[in-house]
Length: 80
Image (cartoon, rainbow, N blue to C red; front, side, top):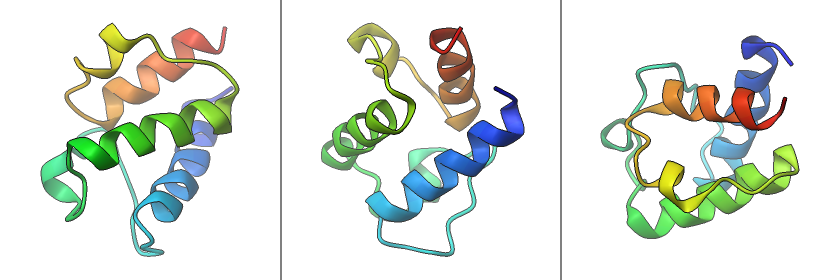
């Protein structure tokens, strides 16, 4: 799967989780860039991403992600 396709799917997940159709994520997007992205919503986001892509992200990886670009890297790695 290409990075571009992952971003298409991630944008849909972010828009659904945060109930905001204007969200467009990119590599450098962080929790500071999305108003309601707190620790509770981070858990909901990870669960929604796991559902979308069909695999579980190890807890160690979910807590070390610094931005969406790192999230995409993990998705690419897990989706192999």
